[in-house]
Length: 380
Image 1 (cartoon, helix red, strand yellow):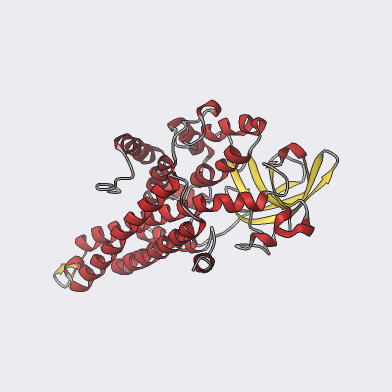
Image 2: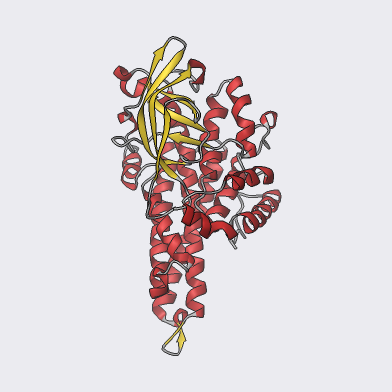
């Protein structure tokens, strides 16, 4: 169980909420983890159960079916999800996609989509990455050309989380290619539109239960009213939402690091070698002691970032630094924890194997560690 004693960013009501989340995961998530890993997909029934349990998009205002809660509730859901060892795409919907609709959507769009996102009846994805454009979103080549009162969308996307399950996709497209980044818009595309096709559920080295897909748009026609916010403002919207996206990844990374550490402590105290437990060797104790110190600092930093985000003060550079620090820490802890498991760590029957695999991509998506260093360095 993830220990939260001493953390001041959460109050008593939030800890009660955390307890409810844990109990829900124990019943609806953990028994299905292995099956979802094999299937490469989380059941839609799980999304509906999440909606019924009130853990999808908790920040959605009550008039659209949500709970109207602050981001700390999202953080609790994400911490417990990662600590449980799951890569289900519910945090993508709750922490990333939904805020684009809350902040930039029309009243019609909010009424149409937000209730279903809260209930789990609508699964969403955001399509940014392309075969030739990753961290550099200015390089997006997918176009949305006006044709009367419609856009005609053409292009392809890849590495899209929730791509196989998604009912609605927020597509990053160029509405005015001559303007570069300033000609980017966000367009809502329903999955039943003619010309929209899903490609492969991509074969990854980790996070196997998170369906990750290729998406193709072959002259997909959507009404102009599917534009999210103002036309050609997409790049600004993306930059505005990146701090929360990177904070979400950082918080998940910290929780993942803690779970890996806890698994290492448990294993080394049970495993015996040369007539003593592995924990009793000085190397083990020194390794774990050093990691414990880093985790202590990591939790303090995560809570500091969360508190600043709640006040609207977390800067892009601070969020980038958080993603850099916590994802690198996650990898360090996971790798050390696997090493302390010895040969057992390489066996999929032990949780550390999945935690290690799932951690690797954290330093890539949402902006690579190298990009995070560049963002931070620009403020020096």
